Amino acid sequence: MLKRLAAACLRHPPSGIRSLRALRAYRQAQEILRQQPVTPGDLGQRQLDLACERAGLPVGEVRDAVARWMEREPLDLVAAAKQEGLDDLLQAAREHGVRVAVLSDYPAIAKLEAMGIAEHFEVVACAQDPEIQRFKPDPRGLEVVRRRLGVTAAEAVYVGDRHDVDGTAAKRAGMGFILVGSTLEPLVVALGGMAGMRC
Image (tube, rainbow, N blue to C red):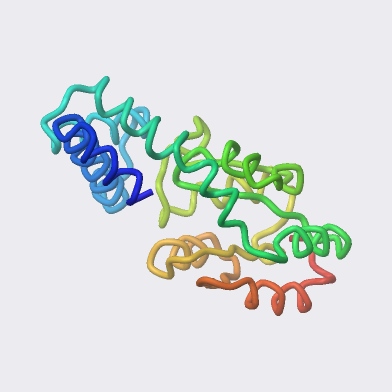
């Protein structure tokens, strides 16, 4: 994505640089809202408004930049970056009775579909869903997903790549946590120990 953004900046410097400003402000807004107390209102709109304020750009421009560079442009790259063995892992989870779901800070279904794995997940949720409206490490999203799956916190394990965000959310939700990096090995090991769980 960085190469594509750089190419866009070289082709059309003014608009490319404004897109970079918008994306940077949008990510910063997420981190700011992550640390703030929960307030009523639409989380996605609050993030967008804060990003516009920080970037000094109009709402439509920031919204368009996010839609293009965070939602549409990454789809082919996400598909190409799918790790070998992921399909086998998800199939093994199903065969062992391990139920899987996704909770993301952003809408995830299009990316799961691009990887060809959407059908493996019983629940796909994001922070902006009406029932959630909170970023991790607030445990609300995990609690909503757990209830939709119909499992208890003791039966659930959350897999994430940020201990400070994902691990803290799991701890607050009373469930286990697995930290993963660039390989599937920790998941494969964990799956062997979860064969009897209703995760």
